[in-house]
Length: 224
Image (cartoon, rainbow, N blue to C red; front, top):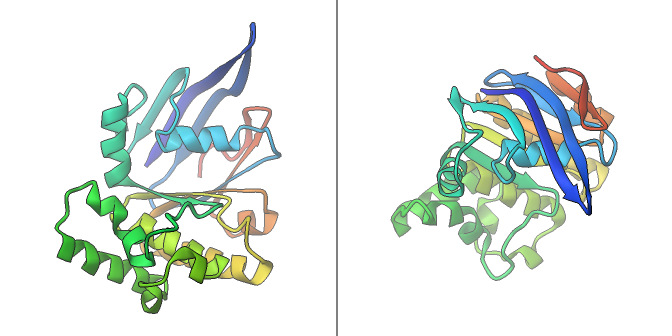
């Protein structure tokens, strides 16, 4: 599903160049539950941003489901993200003025899906995460765990091939975090590829593949 070959990412810093990723070669098989682990500054978030098309590599190749997406322009990447990828963020990234149902349906707006179908698919996605009874609640009326479930439903509503989760349990207590991880495992068991950036060794132990980064390099787990 995902293949990276000799990927580098550099950022200008004054008169110097900072290399965030150095010669990353990684393979993630379709349907795999994968954790990307490492200390702060190891390159985890940069790698996830490149996987999601939110950032572009300086050099190297990135194949997503057999397509070399390394050189995609922003419009092509936007289309790819909307249809092939689902995102789950540590801070939920819900729009506070929208209800849970409206937040979940938002990706379908950009596909020009008719209103009735958007509502129906949003309800189905919320039901998958056990929150259909909260579809008319706004984020401020929900707990952190419920907000993360809404965020996961939003990631799933477009039926993506790959779900990318950035520290999905980072803002949650231990018990709620375990519930969210169980939900992500269930999503993976349904056949989706799930990639999780995490500091948690407990979460990493639950994944089939662990890719460890240090100082922008893969130290272990380059292939499943």
